[in-house]
Amino acid sequence: MAMNVKPVPALDDEVNEIRLGTAEIVNQDILPVEDKLWGWMASGNPRKDVVEEAKQLRHEVQNKVKTAKLWAPHLPTEFGGMGLSFMQHAYMNEVLAYSPGAASLFGVVAPNSGNQKILVKYGTPEQHEKWLKPLTEGRMQSAFSMTEPDNAGSDPRSLQTRAVLDGDEWVINGHKWFTSNGHAADFYIVMCRTADPDDPGGLNEKMTQIIVPQKTKGVNIVRGVPVWGKASSHCEIIYDNVRVPKENQLGRTGTGHQAAQDRLGAGRVYHCMNSVGSMWRAFDLMIDRITTREVHGGEKLEEKQFMQGFIADSYMDIQSARLMTIHCAEKMESGADPRTDISSIKVFVPQAYHRVVDRAIQVWGAAGVSGDLPLANMYQGARTLRIADGPDEVHKILIAKNILRRYHAGESWDFGN
Ligand SMILES: Cc1cc2nc3c(=O)[nH]c(=O)nc-3n(C[C@H](O)[C@H](O)[C@H](O)COP(=O)(O)OP(=O)(O)OC[C@H]3O[C@@H](n4cnc5c(N)ncnc54)[C@H](O)[C@@H]3O)c2cc1C
Image (cartoon, rainbow, N blue to C red; front, side, top):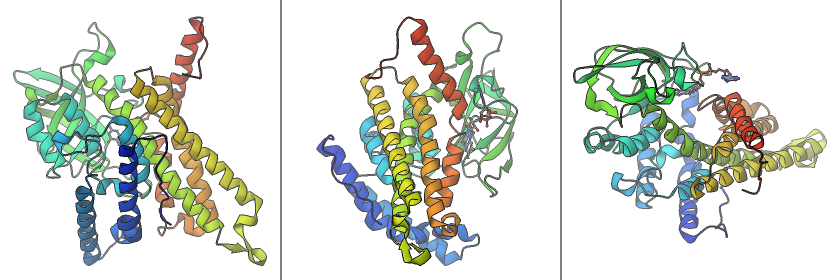
């Protein structure tokens, strides 16, 4: 089923054109060949010609995307991207995420995309030339190395990986895991503690992000940590007396925490709009089955009230997730304090995504958990989102704290703003 994208009256012509152009490529060039592009990955041991064909197809779609000027929506034009505004990018994401995996065909591949944005903002001209340019041109891969097995990732200030200056070099020691894309990455952006924890100054000012090439002596990849029962490239890495030049640090010493917040703030809106696109697809797949599958006595599933309930519940989940995300994005754009809304979408949207995919799987029965449909992967993705980028509980605490602060200050909450 093709994605139904029409111009949105409230949006300007430029955004509508971007959305329609994106939908055209998703509908005409990606959905009909999804099996050939990545469906075969579920088979475990693909034939060489199948992998080769997929590579060729990916190349063809990417060329079409570039010709349509829809390449790299997250990057400014001077770095080969579309130069979109924040809202334009958000509205494009819900369309391209209709096909899981399509983002990579539009030049957006995590964690490279997040690293590219950090390099754009914090990198020096030399760092742009050495790391950002090859990354955007696809000549290099990267990873973001923050989470540690022995400390709570949900509290980045507890991280213990340490970098100490020795002359003109940083010397890094620490133990990380879940460094996604760790095997392929040419370099890691490593979150390090660069000041003594007992120094005066806030905890937030004691972190610095440092670029570490994978080939540096002392970088030991222990393993790819298996995820959802499968081998993965989310790597466990020990940094053992790793020496890199001082100029590999990103931004000023002590800006690492702020850089991580920058990465996550806007990123959360983009991730949520991606989830909306995936929900949209799961919804279409569910309705497709409900309107065609016959059960006991030849009745269509759509005649059953349980199924009608699924349709209504999923519709409400998607609409509320989408409108909450757009509201949050508009608040960020307007310069108002968006923290409560960012945390709210970070909790609500992955949970809604989880419920919507769960219903679609139920409707499809055994096929729902098979590798023939994208639903099983979406389900795992939705569940994982509730942990990554800050688990639900931490964001709920933040929401409650922000709200209570207002009431303690003698104000109440203004839901209109
Ligand atoms: C597939 C995948 C890819 C990832 N990729 C990367 C990556 O590329 N780079 C990277 O650095 N990290 C990555 N991560 C790690 C991710 O960011 C962390 O898992 C996340 O920040 C949570 O940290 P943690 O696993 O240490 O959980 P913990 O911080 O130990 O939290 C565990 C649980 O404790 C509960 N909890 C935590 N704090 C509180 C609290 N204050 N109150 C109540 N309950 C609480 C929550 O239920 C939480 O889920 C990835 C994770 C996954 C699953």
